[in-house]
Image (cartoon, rainbow, N blue to C red; front, side):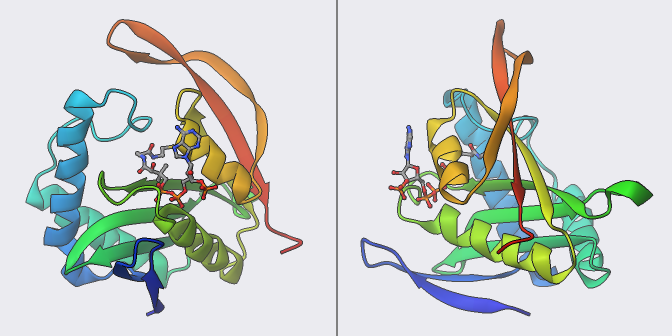
Length: 187
Ligand SMILES: CC(C)(COP(=O)(O)OP(=O)(O)OC[C@H]1O[C@@H](n2cnc3c(N)ncnc32)[C@H](O)[C@@H]1OP(=O)(O)O)[C@@H](O)C(=O)NCCC(=O)NCCS
């Protein structure tokens, strides 16, 4: 398994490594912390963190993730601080035969750990992992109000394709989505 250390600008030490089978409880805690945050911070993520996750679900998710990684169908990295997962980034290969060079990426870092470079580090590991398994086109969708995420993606070389107006219906508001992609062939 790939693993490495990361020292944030504020001096905290993190471990960034691939997701493993023993991560079920750590990932469960991480996911439910984001679910809890989303009740207050309504700007969080697209199509995620909407309802409390069960251990049974998370266990299936982690087993699927590890199996997919072994089969070169996915890449998953976690950032760990004092034994807890505080950041997570995954990329999944698209399944149709003519889209197998493409993958969809998702990322989240826990409140209190954002803005110190972890998101960048996680995403770089995942993009390297994608290249290793022959995925060179990476796609994502992000809410147009998510300034931090868009800034991060642009810094990592993602291009904006355009906007889908009103794709997200949240709290009686229609929010726009920005579609982005990165071509990894010349990296
Ligand atoms: C998006 C997210 C993963 C970024 O992780 P992170 O660890 O904070 O990322 P980094 O610290 O590596 O980089 C964040 C960058 O955004 C910048 N930033 C922070 N808030 C910003 C804002 N409101 N507008 C623009 N830029 C902002 C930071 O300054 C930093 O840029 P810099 O390195 O050039 O200074 C994190 O904010 C998060 O988990 N958000 C909630 C979940 C989510 O939105 N996921 C993405 C869904 S598509």
